[in-house]
Length: 369
Image (cartoon, rainbow, N blue to C red; front, side, top):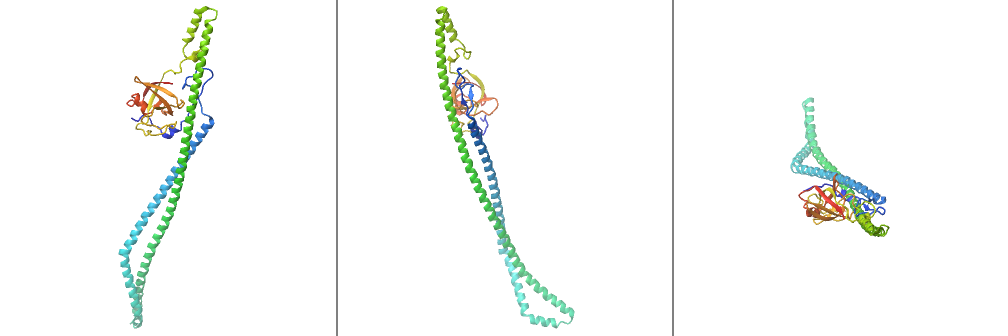
């Protein structure tokens, strides 16, 4: 069931958040105190994404130019093929006929030339000037027709050769343009691949930095909680020994240990597990094209992936999710959901463990560990 739609580039472009610890107040791991990555890291990532977008546009433009050049070459090849068929038809059908006419014309011209003394005698023996003119025109017409047949055959040859020469030249030029477009496309694709690898490397570095920051935050929180426990114990002891006797001291101590989480005093001694929250969840990686994709932390989405995507939670944070009487612990290793109102996007194994595949989108309970 497809319940989540976003491009893989959108997933990779999510910035890792680094956990912070505020003052001496008890902080729970994965709580709301989230820092922002150094400005230089954001600038570098934004610059990389801008360069990658520009290279992608360059690749698309080069691909369009290459396709246009290829279409032009194909068109010229078709024209040359048609011209070759026309030449073949001319040579097999029209040429023999024209050659016969040219041969007859040449023979007639030769006969006329050989018989020229008799022709001259015929002209001189004309009975009248009118007969002379008529016979002269007749002889001129015969000679002109014979000469025209020879010239027509030569013109047909020259026309076909000229067309073929122009088409061949156009094809050579188109193939050169096609090669240039192919080289430009290859160069742009290579640059795009290098930039994509660089972006992936930066995402992996950010994810590692976020993981280390989360570990440091957890260690700092544990240390602060330990210090808070010592302070609470010392305060309780001092209350027991001060002025009002054992019962008053015991009451003071009891009041301290029963103080609710987050109400001041000895609150730094509370448990490290955050309170349960409620939010809308979905899942991805099944039937949506994201199976096998790379998460913001560099992990690969598989059938056994026990990760989730959250927007403002440090990568590497563990979260317990409860739904329908089932609970599962997952790790935040991706950014999302990018649908308004949702807080968790689960990977296949998490959704399957909660029986969430048949639900698609629903409300779950969760807490950070």
